[in-house]
Length: 124
Image 1 (spheres, rainbow, N blue to C red):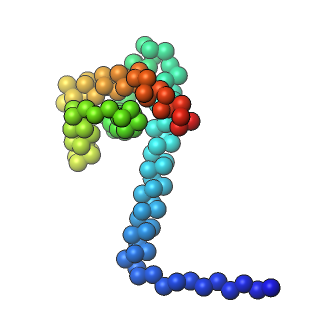
Image 2: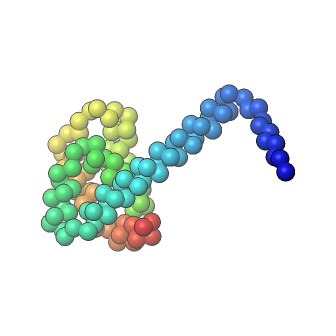
């Protein structure tokens, strides 16, 4: 028995949009997998080691991890939204010392939040 495959002509704009959506989904899944690994490593540490690890994160790693944990926690902080928006709009701009210190403190506090711990257990 032979099978014949038929393809459907799709406008280039639609095909490009579908491919962009697929690529975006793959990138998001990769980002989530990387952040999940980082957060699991931080959660596996004792309190002092975790705090030191958070405070030693470079800015891009800090912002990516903060974004992931913030979305995972379901909290609604205007400060976190503003700082994430600022770094998304201009990723090359360095945070001020106070912003960086506040972001690290917020990340550490969110990592100790029970909602994040339970959400991480559910995603694993």
